[in-house]
Image 1 (cartoon, rainbow, N blue to C red):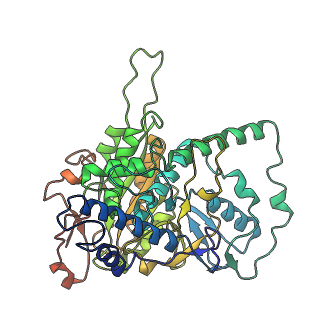
Image 2 (cartoon, rainbow, N blue to C red):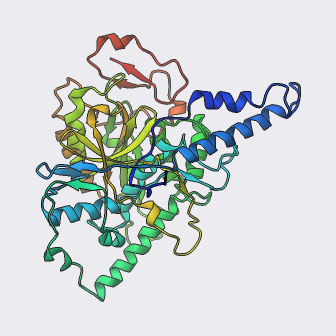
Amino acid sequence: MNPSSPCEGQSPEGDPPEDWFHLSTVSLGTQGSYGSQDDPEEPEERGRLKSKLVSAWNNVKYGWSFKSKARFSKTSPLTMLGQSYLLSHGVERESFRRAFATLLWLTYRRGFPQLDGSSLTTDSGWGCMLRSGQMLLAQGLLLHLLPPGWTWLSAHHVSKDDMEVQESRSLGPEVTKKGRRKSIASFLESRTEVTHRRVVSWFGDHPIAPFGLHQLVEQGTSSGKKAGDWYGPSIVAHILRKAVEAASAEVSNLTVYVAQDCTVYIDDVVRMCERPLSEGSKGPSPAWKSVIILVPVRLGGEVLNPTYIKCVKNLLRLECCIGIIGGKPKHSLFFVGHQDEQLLYLDPHYSQSTVDITQDNFPLESFHCKCPRKMAISRMDPSCTIGLYAKSQKDFELLCSAVSTALSSSTEKYPIFTIAEGQGQDGGQEDESDAPPNSITHILTKDKERLRRTNTSNSMDEFVLL
């Protein structure tokens, strides 16, 4: 078998088989060549070797992909992050190609500097939720720092992908006539490309990258997480909040709000976003910080409650939506759109070599994917985090109105989440690890037999079924 290109297909799903872990431990023995049972260095040495074996397995497993085309309808509109495309129209299809190829694609990497407190140099097999969280944050940063409608310059030259659209037609001359301006246009393009490269570098797998894996793992330690652990969408939301707060030097005009108990409290968001006048300044500083709003929710018990499907699709139609961190059980994906009853996503389950983002003009191609993928929305794991972005105070007001309308479409008595006046207990800044026992997100499900289920683990993603 020859490996396909990074986004020509899906990687195998799931985690390494249990017998692999068993083999990696048992093969060392309790009294083998690595020392006697009483040797105090044996457990540490055995743990390091086990980690290397599992990492090697995951690098092989996620370093291969199987080519398969995603079929798209030519008659049904395709929605992606607030924009709608009819793929039977050449111009719209090209616009979708460019928009999709512009999204940042953060995947498993191998060969990066060791993560603190471990011997791991890859996140293959365990870091997919962190990667999905990176992609959501990256989309928010691109909206925050680049002009509306910006697309990656190299995306304009994409000539081949794995989209299959029946009776697709050539684009015609109208597309090639665009983008002919020079001078001012080329100057603006160069500036936006510099900003784009800077944003990509922030997600590099290097300890200095403010939103790279090293920093996210470090931010998770205060919540009891470490490298190699499974991260849920709720704890990732809090990790992203802390990472942005710690990176105020790089992103000074942005804050992240994490909803409490499936409620976005307007007063709390306003208090976080309003900024006092700068002391000693000649004029007033900007009165409002842009905000990324993260809403951890659970849309059912063991499976997705179908009454919430319409709401999920409605949210992805909003221009303020920056994606959904979700996926399938133990298999995180980053959802960005839908067509009919299929969700459009970016998949982090592909192991690529680490790119040295400290070098000038480091290659950008592996941070973008040209091959969209779809899955049935009914297969979506009910545990997810919804991302929203508001650049200005006016945008936030429009967000509240649009989201409330989108959520009101549910036939369920209780919406996915609510936007309410007033304040929460902690202004949305509470770390989940410090949450009191009663501060637990609620799940709404119509399956009464699931009400008996409780979460006895020490997981961050605890929910109460109502």
